Image 1 (cartoon, rainbow, N blue to C red):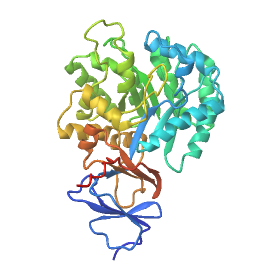
Image 2: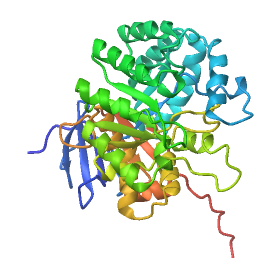
Image 3: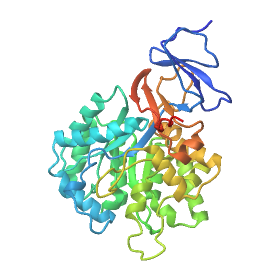
Image 4: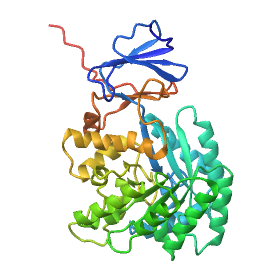
Length: 414
């Protein structure tokens, strides 16, 4: 007997099925995944295109997006980006942060993203203004996208005790987890420990920006691995950037990869930012500066790809398209095979969902978060940067982007 269904997305290709299926939706959940579903309900034909549960952007900075008009990029270095943004954020207002962040969130929705984790800087310059704005944004856009907030210490911690106090206030007032940046702190090991202290106190996960340079020495990863294991935080820790890995020999990368996998620490690569900011001291044969996370994935690490920054000194371009970011990573990493494309697709979808603790895929009983891509397979989607055509959040359609068409001239009469 067929289940009661509110809506059917017919003739859809989904992961793990050899032939197209119909996706039946009722009360915001998937209730059927089978060919030729015999129900009388409103329907749409996917026409053999790929359908999945949406992209997940597990590392983005909504609070400082779209501030290029307030900054001057001369050096194009990480240090300049931190400095320029620190100067700009003192003037941020709640309304200003909300408007700029909403602009990026709407682009993310149009590009098929159904969940994201945003870092929000909390310190004496930004105060809690950005947090207030992003909390409101999270509520206002919950109909289309799930937003997780990471209260973040961008400019260090041990040299600025006020920041630690403000992080605690942020966690007490709605932030979902806490993040640190040991490379901007004069005492990186203590920075890492204090961030873990806050996470233990409030029962949250942690997400670090770490090892953001091309010197293989001086890594903060040993501190993070040690604290993760000592405190039993496996599966609750993420690291962004880790560009030092791009400067290591393969055997050294594998050794670090095994340590991260054993500790249960995820790694997120941010290709647009990492390519833009690293290697500025080189005059020729400029290194890519992008951590080989596909190699870490093969070693059992939860490896993901994300946007990071949009239109600011860290990344002066961007459109919140995770497929574009996946394509960029595949190109930089010189990947070619279909299985490699599929692995990269997973890094912006199911792997990123696992990192954030979201439902990772389509199954009977799962939330009816659906994204229809203009491609038949994940590999084709990555190769072609396929356009998302429509999206549903908990069974309700939230986005429509019709496929482009060629307008041919009418034939001339004989």
